[in-house]
Image (cartoon, rainbow, N blue to C red; front, top):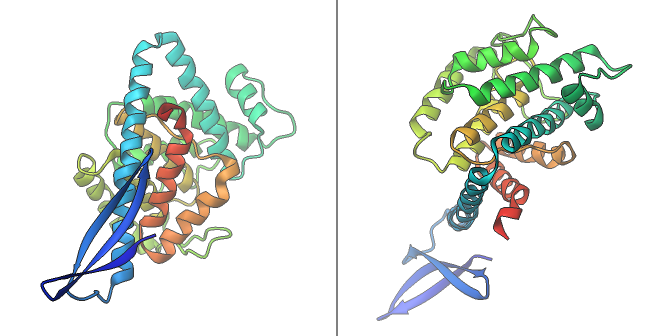
Length: 295
């Protein structure tokens, strides 16, 4: 817990924020100076103080994950790396499609993408979109192009050109809602200017922000713009893994089973117009996914 501490030096009162953290068997105290008076925005300062502490601790873990992952990749035969990537593509495709309403089970997705076995009594659109997502994922992994509006429009077209040509690769010019969410996506008149700002932000910050922070914010910002009639979450999660792969970090799957906490974190950040909630959720989820590299 963050505490306000008072110090008196030569009759003058000074205020500090203090927070204790445990690292192994040691306890360290972190402080930040407030001044001779407690600021009126003290609660916001407390949150920023905790954020800075969390970032320092979390990013150490995340960078350790990258280092150990990279070392493991270098010692792994090429054939094994290729098999691991195919397995990841199947898992990623299942969870990202399932989150968006696909009826395919995990086993049906694996049978379809590994063996070409089409499940019986399931919508053909679910089958075609799963295959399209798998193919697009592998194409993105091989691409030498950087993130751009043209690239994202092509990704969207490849996802939906067989199942919904009316929206495939097209920016929406109509209003949309998000089922079960209180957040209302931007008006269609605002979408194009917001996309321009998004890609300007990305290119300005892609080599400044910590890669995992960049990924989380890119995901949040893009899905908040909600530029397409459908598939915004899928494209946002492809952007997420495009950046992670480009930055040499292990990629991430948002599990279908954790969709509620995922949606809640997104919605809270969107409604409050602040990044903190989703960023914290994302980094914690990332560390949880790759805790094996921290043992």
